[in-house]
Picture 1 (cartoon, rainbow, N blue to C red):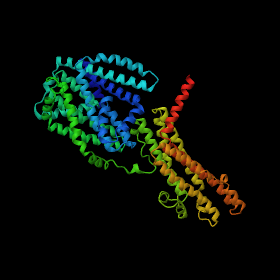
Picture 2 (cartoon, rainbow, N blue to C red):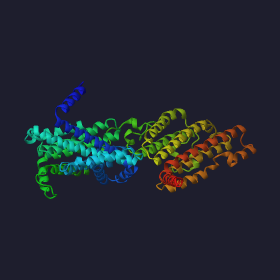
Picture 3 (cartoon, rainbow, N blue to C red):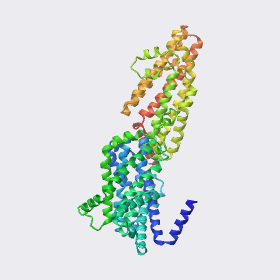
Picture 4 (spheres, one colour):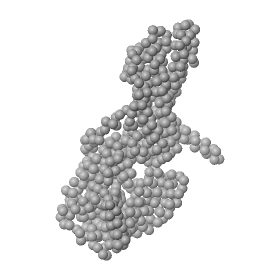
Length: 591
């Protein structure tokens, strides 16, 4: 009912007052432009943009600068927030770097104010909007995602320019009938009131950039006083954090932590700006002639103020980032996140970029591998603490003769099945937004994860025989089954080394070497089974069990190797080689 009354009231205002209609239409068109710009940069920049961000956010100062620069270019702090959250959720960056990006993005948003004050209110900016819209539509209908991205960026710029033009015309018409400057309130009370108005306006509009555009256009038309515009700008900064908090309610813990960091930063910045508002105004008046701003150019002065107080906030809060991180890490901690059978990395906010999505699936695959490893080793009555210790392999196997009581099917259901299903579901959801190379890699990850599930099923089939024969009175069958366990211990130790290798080429060679070394697991192929039978060292029942079980263990070893090859050895070199090979083959066919 309330919404219906609001919509009816808005419809009445739009139909009754032409000048207000023009202003509100300008705001709407401006916001549409921001949406198109954000979507355009998502599609156009793709993995390259994300890889640049990953490389340039490894240190907090670099993260702040990158957040500033990229936000100034893409004109969307919300996009940068989404990327920061997705990178953080995928563990591409730490919480401190994510906070740095948010801090830098706050400075980057001031670019909107400079654009509007420099061009929007001084030239007929809407004149440049129409060509952008025309070319934006043309590019938008092309098949290439890159061209579609360029089209969205052009459409975004066109709508932003058109929106500024509408707002400018609307305020010029409005001042003929209503002088908003008459609502100026003297003193500190006026500052507080206008801060509140700026905050509420930003929460309603859901864009601090749009709020700043309105403030600057209104100021340029003398519809509001300069000091009121400054207060509105401070309010807009506070309002944008409320928008971020509302958006983070459905996000994971990392999203909530960044939103809280954003709120703390903006509140501290706003507090200093409020207390020092008149002193900062004097600083702006002092700096304006130095940077070439005319004494009566209040739009440019407001932009300068907006930049100064955001930079001031970063300088004040940045030295305390480590303390802020420690505080935030104690918040939004959920025991459910640590449950073995639950995904740790597959959050909705991670899917915002292809890099964070593929990284999240890779890390979740490693999570599934660790859970699977527990079942595989316990199914063979081996303990991972012994496997990955400094103990000799013979000693590890010799000391592990007591069967471990594990219900493989029950443990699989609790720790692997749902996790595997989540990986498959998530991979399918993000696949349509990935380039061909990343889509192929995700497909290969799905294959090796399926292999881990099958490895668990193979272990379930051999568990009974291993529990029987590793402590059997017949030393020959006991030795054969323990030899199979030694092979698995050796393999897992080598795979751990491969997982820690930084050089993919070295990892690839190590995997290939392991493949050759583990060929003799199959007792038929290595000939040992024939000798044991001929010499009557084992009976036919033992021989049949050993033949079958050695095949299952051989399959398990191969599935572990396939996982290592895809996840740890096949990350970059082979993927890029495959892509280059396909490109060359396509070129040959085309010629």
